[in-house]
Image (cartoon, rainbow, N blue to C red; front, side, top):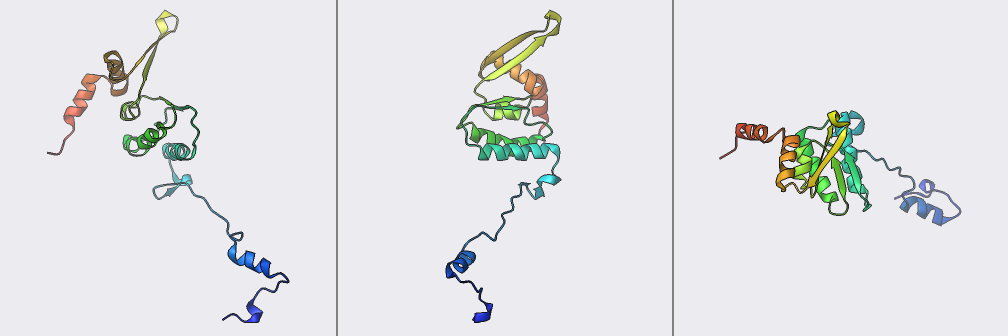
Length: 165
């Protein structure tokens, strides 16, 4: 039981009430972490991933978003397990343009439109574009060439992976 000498002496009992029941004496501390590592402990790729995921989760604007190689300096597992789900979720409320050479982002994120761009330096830097759905045969060939390193390369990698029975 508190004695009279332990209580705050104030002419206004309302001031004591505010101090006891308010949170003004607390100072919030915010930390961005990826797993167990804090922001200052992360590699540049991990920092970029964390900040992009944080942005995608916090920003509720419905305006289009352009991401230029968001997979830079990030391993494929992290792209697939962390970045892809966040981008797929953000796609529900906004249009996202992604510049990438990563099949996890273009194919696994289910791109509605694939735009292939090439430049012909021999012809005065003439630029060519091909666009359409990934299921379109012309776009599919371009996508597999750019994103997978050609279909034979993809098939070769695919044949070497062990699949559980």
